[in-house]
Length: 330
Image 1 (spheres, rainbow, N blue to C red):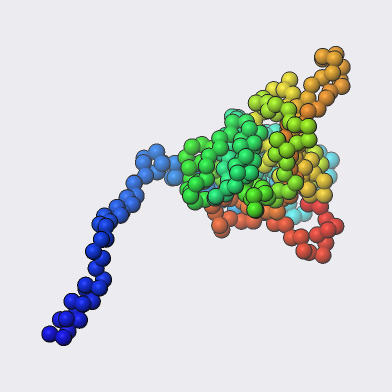
Image 2 (image 1 turned 90 degrees about the vertical axis):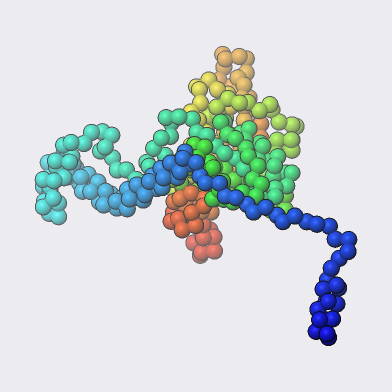
């Protein structure tokens, strides 16, 4: 009887007389992907494989381009062929004869990433990091107004891979993610879809539209002219290409201007509209700042989309090297 009494006492002490019945939580059901989503996944995977294959051939094509260029120079100047090119002269000469002006130059992976730029207007998705503050939400709204044809979505609890997947399925050309530290915007990520690249910038000195001295001018919805100042190097032209492809081609008479000005690898962003004094009879113009304004600095470029953790790194900032303060990369 003693073991039985112990069991009964133990069971009686664990039971609650006024406990409410809680039904079991339903299990989450994972819906199978639709036919359109599966086709989109297969298409993106195929495009990625083709892009990586063409990128693997870039070194061979570059060496062939240099050899053809030397042959063209020797034939145009009437000089003898270099000794190391005589064995492959017949093959390269036949390729030179069949090339036109379009295929005469050297191509790279950049042509695959931005090959469709200019054919149609870009579609940009703007979002934030998780649990954004009110200031970051306001900054993302102003980024949405700044970039034409853009859509702002709430981040919620979506993972990065889910976010990129939805953007690819919805035919967005770019994904812009703004980040913060203690309520101050301090990070900007620009991911080009569907192949990449992904550029990471730090932000500083951000001033929203309602914080401008004297107030801001009304926000125009016209496609802006993009001014890229002092992007001299090959990496600078690469960064300028990433930034300008966020904006569609404007009309000639638009009076909205977006400026990215580089000074010692620090990019200053300004947004203006202008009006001509005395009508259109003079060349004098008056600028009105619209906002927002901020400073940017590039610290990484990856050859892939945002969710690819094993993507190849094209450039990374190394500020603690001995020559970092002397060299400018943009």
